[in-house]
Image (cartoon, rainbow, N blue to C red; front, side):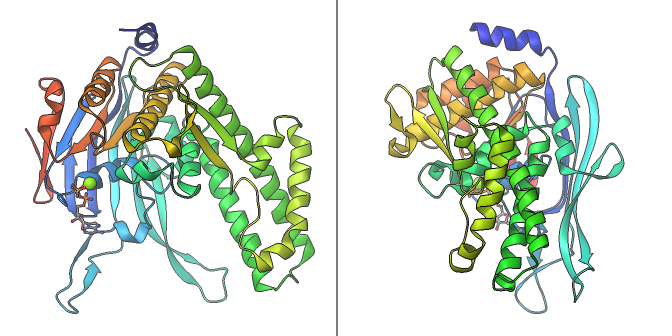
Length: 405
Ligand SMILES: Nc1ncnc2c1ncn2[C@@H]1O[C@H](COP(=O)(O)OP(=O)(O)OP(=O)(O)O)[C@@H](O)[C@H]1O
Ligand SMILES: [Mg+2]
């Protein structure tokens, strides 16, 4: 065991994670209750049996739209409709609830979707809203969840993370920030909301919107945007420092960078000046919104990853190398969270064995064991996880239920 693992063990003597998970009308599950242990859980089953859906449900115990970035209305359980031969939701809602054990203390968390009405609009419209309950207290904000649980996920869609557009990379980075700064989730969703309002206001009035209204939105966007940029920079610096001081023996060392105008300005200017610049820039680009679709800012920043030893940008690395780079990032993040936050995140590893060679897969399993993590790992082949025999729980998903082996 390396020094860091020893440090981690000293910092955290008790484990954290989910000890009960209940799903109601969630995707293919009408009702499911499982009691995971605070260690690795290997979830196997045929294609389409419901493995990823369990991981997605767990991801809803943290802020945001879950590991599929799904629309809330797509999650409620659909059943074949008798009447119109289509697929019709059996009811409006779905729910996920869980008991969380955090360093020996238990907490109850629940999240569900609820229909709400937007009454301020000319024609009141109903919309789906995610609500959160913590320890029987209703109406909690999603960002409060971060005090009790945090999750890091790797999904097959992320195999293309370094090659496509910047939005998924930004979301990935922002989730790494949430764990250290619970307010970050609120900030990013506030910024998105303000930006949408601003954009629609300019478009709908063909540039003749009320000046005071535009200015107040621009003020909110520049203040929130600079806070987002600062938090991203801090997280990248933290991870780079950590990786530098504790190089991994198997997974490649990464160099993380941010490519964003606002983030880069913070290198040399105080936040207040960057905020002024951002506010003026937004105001000066109002007209551009009429002809283009977006304005440069924190909504366009990119998260750049390099394979350090090879000095190779991640997008030019092989598929297996890209997967290993992602594993490096999530392992560094996990260790940082344990050391600095005092509790471990849960890992949601969907088909993680794909693209990893045998030695990398075995190394990843060894690291999960060494760090004593709760990790939910899906696969269609349980034999790949024989190193976890007598250590992990093995679940098989079949007929919309889970059989613990
Ligand atoms: N809203 C929904 N209502 C009912 N079923 C759904 C809903 N959304 C998805 N499903 C179904 O849930 C099933 C399980 O999906 P899931 O992605 O969890 O499978 P999986 O076991 O991970 O499969 P694979 O091995 O192919 O990744 C799929 O057949 C899918 O069509
Ligand atoms: Mg799947």
